[in-house]
Amino acid sequence: MLERFAGWLVGRMLASQAFPKEDAPLVSFGIVQGLRTLIEIILLLCTGLFMNLFWQGVVILLAFMPLRIYAGGYHARTPMQCAVKTWILFFGILFLYRFAPGLLWIQILILVITGLSLWRFAPVEHENKPLEEYEVIKYRKRAFGVYGTETALFVILQLLGATGAARCIVLGIGMMLLIMWIGVGVNWRGHHYE
Image (cartoon, rainbow, N blue to C red; front, side, top):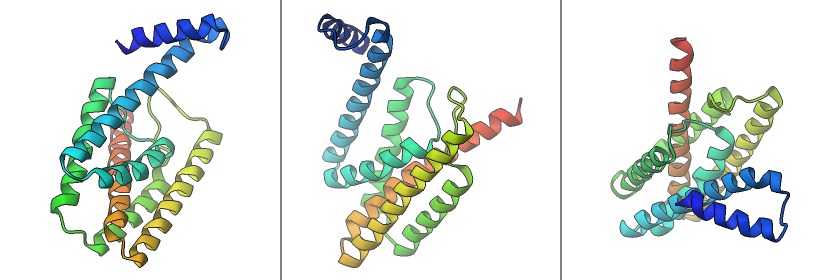
């Protein structure tokens, strides 16, 4: 269904000469990916709303998404698997927010482990998208930039007494950390058995 809509939209854009015809497959792919991402985000936000944790879900996603882009990690084999696995992980993170104690020392430990993991593993490559050395350097710097910004924001929010928002930042970072570790494990297992 998304592919048909993207095809229709690309046809309309081609009629208005928005881009060269040879770029149509790439534009169509981008539209489909963008729509899938939008649907996943709406699903996740609806989950937060259903659990009465909407703003917490927003903050968790805002902490998770930029780190995920630059740090890499596990990729599901199909878009449906990606959506389902991401939803399960997000639900689990919201469940932790709701029921687990927000101990400061655990949050600091997550931040430290994330920093060390980024230094050691970021960006985690995927078998379908190997990275050149300059890309590794660029993405690692950007991942650390996002991580440093989010860590500073965590500290500021803690000092201001906004502990719930600070905790959500750590949970978003923790969500990315889990995906990064799974990606490292999958890559290690794949190389180990070759």
